[in-house]
Length: 188
Length: 188
Image (cartoon, rainbow over the protein chains, first blue to last red):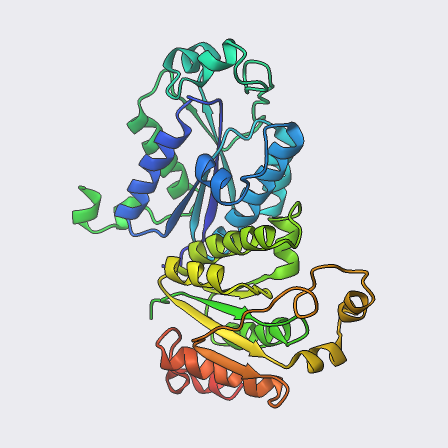
């Protein structure tokens, strides 16, 4: 089967679980021999956008760059997974219009939960005023209005979120249905 | 046949023929149904590096970004063609070390020839001092020492250059040999 390619665009607050879930999805796709690339926010900031800050303008520029690269990949049959906060609705929708196969995944966890997790210790710094313009604290996060997939990570496990996303990709026809996979892969 | 993927890195002076030859190679690959993307210098400057200028540091940053994207594509089976002056040897070699399948194409035409062509009118502006730091005029171009392919565009036609490159890609095993193509494609 020829791969169709798709951009799987994760969005959500810092600490909501974007990177963790995207890695789980990546793993599941590799097991199925689907070509996949994860464009992680931190890596992209280093490799493509080192000079950019976190103003709305700079965030939008960063998101457009990621969209440009994701489009190059997904139009060539690769599953391009992006995992960035991407807080602004308008630029996410701009990317959606540019990319033929676009699936938005809203990794939705309440701010209190993300702040309690505080995996990178960033919320504490933002509350202390050491980081300015932090999404959810003193910078806005605009929820997607019609995301294709929502993962409620305060209530569901990582595995449940990953399973839901894989099932959606199958249902949407972007990856082969698991019932057509060889037993050794299906039972992995 | 599973595509191996390769980065085809064009380098040479402005006006040497990089963009024209790369488009010819792209066309030939599409006829053969090979997945291909051209990362043209001007497009990349707009989409990935708008804020960068033409200092050595900024040029190197731009080249590293193109290398990052070309690597993502070619490691997924796509022929990534880059067409930029990329005047500095060290950063070209840095990209070469990063990318598994890397083929450097030196589009070699004497400065006088490129200046006579002056397709974009840039040499005239550089000579008039309206553009500073123009490669070949007041900024260096460091020739590749061991490019896989050299196209002498002052002496050979575009078609000859394209044919030479396609033959090299076949010989190196990056694209299927034309004798295995269906007649309808071979006689295109």
